[in-house]
Length: 117
Image 1 (cartoon, rainbow, N blue to C red):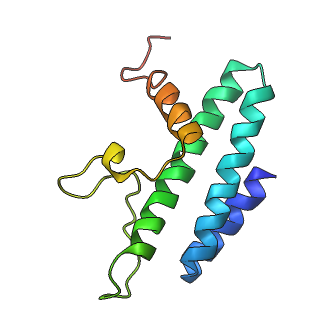
Image 2 (cartoon, one colour; image 1 turned 90 degrees about the vertical axis):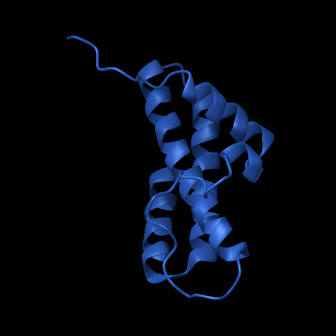
């Protein structure tokens, strides 16, 4: 079900319906958060955490775009997750406590080097 929400979010995002896309990205992340709570498979949990982070990053970009000044009606940045100059994600304060907890746990599981297999 999260995949359907995410696909709908991307479609709305591409059409310029950013507020509706924002809601769909957030809903997809919420669904995956619930899935992770009840799933025991570490590979699935890791994949879900990656998807949650991507959805929340894009939702953050859209939220910033929607709440920002209405000077320019262009497409929001296509690089989600990059904070604006001089601010960090923590300063943005756009994540709920539960979302921030998941993001913090994800950051500890991200591989910075590829393993020798």
